[in-house]
Length: 157
Image (tube, rainbow, N blue to C red; front, side, top):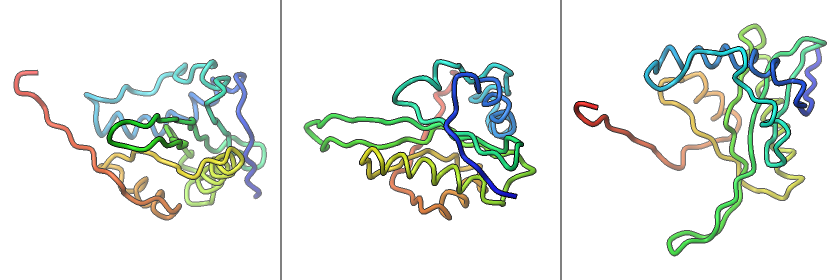
């Protein structure tokens, strides 16, 4: 069955929250002190309408199968770094029944197309080290590590 990707609207907020639930549950199970469990109203309608937000829904036939939420990020020049612009992928989620069938790739392709139309050459994202499936997916989509973020708990906090 064909995959179609369309731009989300504010009317899709409840759908986006539902599509986020599976991936949010994975994160909440892995890091319950960091991630909240899924909520029915997790995706605010105003986020979709933000001109810097890029939100797409993938459908297989008439069935919603996944979504991606990204945004344009502009960084001014500093004494240490040149100015740059990128599109940052905040969230991507594909329902389990539709994984490994091209839905995620179609969503990333939609973000790439939007980046090209805006003349933005860089896509970025964070992927959690516990999520081996996501890391492998993003590598298949042409993403490569460029930075490593680390953290340490302060004793007694």
